[in-house]
Length: 392
Ligand code: HEM
Image (tube, rainbow, N blue to C red):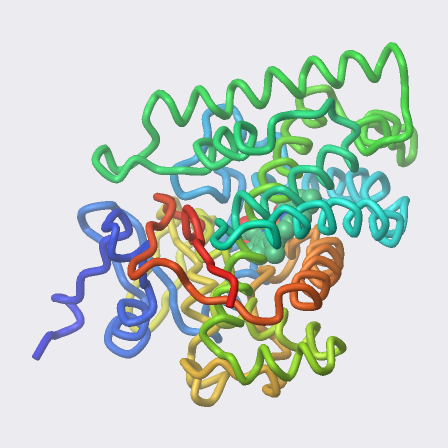
């Protein structure tokens, strides 16, 4: 028997990357407000607590960044690392730029990249879903949307994955991971300068030109917000598509139903966001004391909101460990909640829906070609490094 005080959740254990769910379940039941003495952070895992904390930015502040091992220079300069009123201003300006064009303009480019990728896949027997499909599409679409010059998809994804990764051995970021983000910031900085001289029809230009009541974004804010778009648009999105493909592999009945009726893809997307979102955990810092489950979270304490754990809380979702595309997974926290609710959710749903329908239309059956998956090393995100499939 373990008392709550004995419960250990080691965020830096590779076991958490591979399968956090049994660990979350213990925390949810035995220590819903869990303090890690070693890492000096609280972890919240129950749906009601995580959802309320995501809404309550005055108690759970983002000003020190939402990445658990925060990237130097990011706090205070982008959406995920500010509170109102600064966040409201940034969000309104970024949203004005981001939502100016309806996502439907991406339909043709997605179909083109997907078809080319599928031609290559069908000419082989085994393929890595990440490099051959999900990442191939998200890199191409993100570069197009931002108006960035063509990049080698494997290399840019490698850099973005490094930028969001954690070195478990040092319980934080190592020099190579920090440098990967610096490279991205330098690259975007140069692109912002180019747009100042020669505006174009792309998101970076729209960010630079967005204006509300005579206010505009500063260059550092444009670079850091663009970096958020690049990291989320390349990595969170391809990771999520990869997790959805894995779910559809593991649940052949659901896959067969979607092949017969592609209109069910939207339900599968929501269920996968609930079941295993790529964005598992985000950081907040307590802005004032808060008593939760008999424990006092003190102002200044770091608090981790485990969205992935909340999404498996049986108090909210009956039989939470069952993948069921018919469940009404309304209210899941796969895109977060409150002021920081994912700004790219509509785009993410659209790109995933179009890409996965296309995939299943031409590859209705596939089999996992590995007995064990390797997982990226990250304190926030969860995704397989590669997903080898073979055609059936
Ligand atoms: C399926 C893929 C995605 C998932 C699972 C996801 C998930 C999330 C989550 C959970 C948050 C909240 C973070 C927090 O609470 O601190 C968030 C925020 C955000 N996401 Fe996404 N995201 C995805 C794709 C995208 C895409 C494609 C974009 C844009 C290109 C994007 C842009 C953003 C931005 C800008 C924020 C910050 C919003 C704010 O703080 O106001 N995301 N995302």
